[in-house]
Image 1 (cartoon, rainbow, N blue to C red):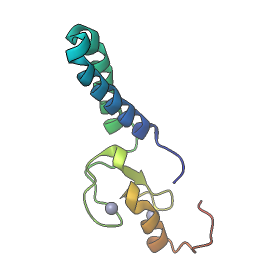
Image 2 (image 1 turned 90 degrees about the vertical axis):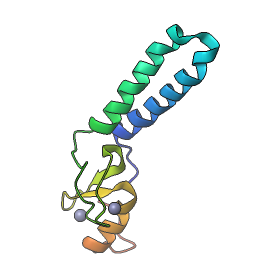
Image 3 (image 1 turned 90 degrees about the horizontal axis):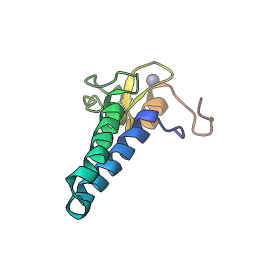
Image 4 (image 1 turned 180 degrees about the vertical axis):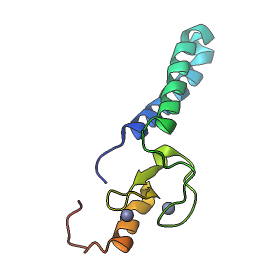
Length: 105
Ligand SMILES: [Zn+2]
Ligand SMILES: [Zn+2]
């Protein structure tokens, strides 16, 4: 769980850039912030699609709810099924019978 996916980092950096750009627009003008907003948008899109692991649109192996965003998904390293980031621990515990004291991976 500890490792951050590059897509997640890009998504939140993009979100921050986009927000900062939009907030700064009334202060410094659209010409100054347009590049920032564009970079933010590009990062957002990269975060949503660029992780190289296509889980979007597939049902979560743990809770069965369809995964909406790539940055929200994990691919289980045991069974290669997509699960939500928040469901990954529960899925591994339930589907792969991880003992509580057993180290991950
Ligand atoms: Zn789930
Ligand atoms: Zn699994």
